[in-house]
Length: 84
Image (cartoon, rainbow, N blue to C red; front, top):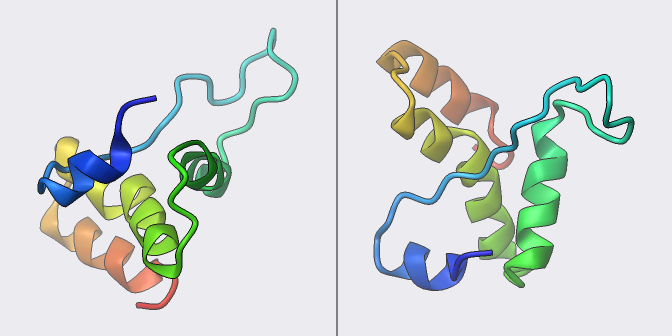
């Protein structure tokens, strides 16, 4: 795992994801991004309230920034994020 808190503090756009949506050969996998955020905050040891928010951002708005996503979808993601 990268030094997530240090990268975020330096202003790097950190995004979380995984590479196995509904994999037939890997039975414990799913495409539920809340689990990705959950794992990220524990592995990166950033379980403060601010850290939880940044982990949600890492699977929503930050991830959308590295993908070719429209501004309309970005606004939708922002409004759907917890605490928005």
